[in-house]
Image 1 (cartoon, rainbow, N blue to C red):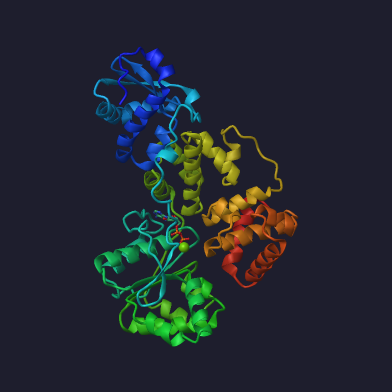
Image 2 (image 1 turned 135 degrees about the vertical axis):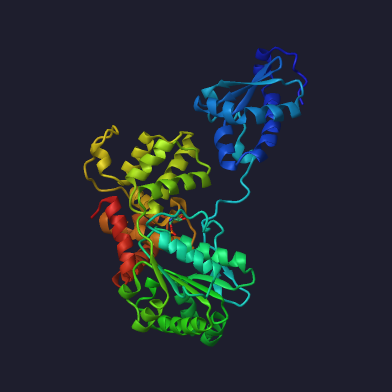
Length: 487
Ligand code: ADP
Ligand code: MG
């Protein structure tokens, strides 16, 4: 490494920027494996070696907030790493230099030098062809029974899942979980699947949604392969079907499911089902409903304050987000609808934190919530924001609301991808643009990566048709409409 230690610090700072940069890169390479990625990117972005002063290595930080954090968390590691690069370094001294921010000449671009290994994956989105040929979604390892926070609202459901994981096919068969959107049903279903697989690695665990199951049946009928698909499903050890309310009006699929259910049930294979409402309220064949009622039925409802706070603490940890307790408390107090909503606010806080290097504060969270229109009461409180006139949302706001609701990124929504997860939110956004913002098909198409106006027209009429006989979808769209304030 550089041998210019004897030069006075001033000269070195201005003349040897290049070697300072090399030195800092070497040091960062040693620190990086010891620090979680989120923390590393946040706290080391736009940092640099500013120079030397004898045995002192002067490290520049772009934001004042970083100072205490570095001293508390990284000083030791930085010194050790620095000494490995240059044994004459005796001490690390920090200096805040706001000029470092976004100045590629002076600092190292962490995102280029330390690219992310894997993209953060959305849970449960990929599909696998199982050996037996059934399409099952991969169980996301993100969902475990242990990282599910238990409170009054979900105690029974959680306990039932635990019992089923310990003894699949036992007395809780079928297990039927129900509750509103974003309250943890999918989490519990997947966690149970994961847990069973851990105990019984050879078991065939199939997790699917009722929509995917329907598609499979439709496809099998079309290809005249129903017999084969039927045979395969009946070899499954654990069948998990999410959101069975979507089987409404799909008689043929219900029939197939009924027979599969019976076969598995008689062989004491575990069946786990979720829906947005209890069995008797489902718009399904009576014989299916009576099957669902045979086993264990448990609901998940909205979590209380303590549970919400516990979930936030857990999620903040998961996302490596440092956030003050009073800020988490503030979010828990003001976000009462669903866990997904809690996560949504937290994700916004993560974005703020990653993009602007701003630690979330009560003020910034209040601002986020205000933007999301989450809590009208906030306006009356002393958060320093004035009451907003009710106005028509912009298309951008509509798209953002849909993206939050379905947890897909705005970029994916407006981009070229054609995954099923993205199609629906995209169609809904297009519909809302047409319905409430008076936009033309051409105008909407432009926003969505210059799609052709006929594509938009098809999308809109498709979703309109779906809404005619899909009560759940109607509720979802209604929730978004309420959120953006058009109804
Ligand atoms: P649902 O299937 O009921 O619509 P999800 O299972 O998708 O809801 O939950 C939405 C999000 O909230 C998921 O990211 C899930 O991990 C999280 N979540 C819900 N309940 C809890 C809980 N009790 N503890 C931890 N995370 C939860
Ligand atoms: Mg779900």
